[in-house]
Amino acid sequence: MPTILITGGSGQVGFELRRQLAVLGEVRAPARDELDLADPEAVEAWLGQHQPDLIVNAAAYTAVDKAESEPELARRLNAELPGQLAAYGARRGKWLVHYSSDYVYSGQGQTPWEEDAATAPVNVYGETKRDGDAAVAASGCEHLIFRTSWVYSAPGGNFVNTMLRLGAEREALSVVADQIGAPTPARLIAQLTALALSAWPRTGEASVAPGVYHLAPRGEASWHDVAVATFDEAARLGMPLTITPEAVAPIATADYPTPAPRPLNSRLNLTRLEEALGVTLPHWQAQLALTVEEARRHHAT
Image (cartoon, rainbow, N blue to C red; front, top):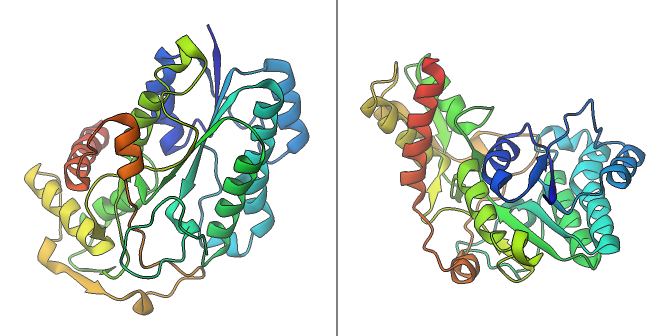
């Protein structure tokens, strides 16, 4: 069987990829004690020894605020590592799948970003993700870059799980209402990745043309909208809550200062991916409902 290297296999997206891509080849997702992605020599040695047939890079430095004080590590994981993996792919004639972010854009305006829009990140995390995209594109490697937004899953540290925890502890919350995007479940990212790679075991090629694609659910929401929808769904499922959706107050980004500035407009135009795959992407609310239900089962065990 062909071998698939998944980096970041213990993360939200990586875990779902391990489940979805197992039918396409032998998945290898080395833990940190097996492969330190922050060490370029260790990465080169692993690639040389195992020679994967496909690389799916789900590893990233995602602590947006902490990246402001750890720019070197963020740059290594978000820019240099994808460039290194792409260089291997170029030398060996192998495909690379890489995941990027809505944070590469300026966050201005209200129009959904198209894939060829100018990049102008507002923080270190976004800058390093932009530079990683550029390194992959410049490598000559056949690649897919999926730019996604507001990733979450039933397990793990993310906004939805934080809301479920706080909703069982507090009677009121204030949540930012002027940042607009689409919460994207890791499950959907992995499913669409598998669909985009469905031809690869037979042909050695992806099922879509190489390049950059936006990957997110349909619709748009603020973080406040997501919080309210999370509590609505949790209440419907009978999960323990001390808060009601009406007790979630909308606030402005300026009222919730963070070390790293946030983009206000994270809307992504999804036309290119829908047309390439021949699908209609699901709405964010339906996907959120599925994940909250999964979280309920997860917490119950």
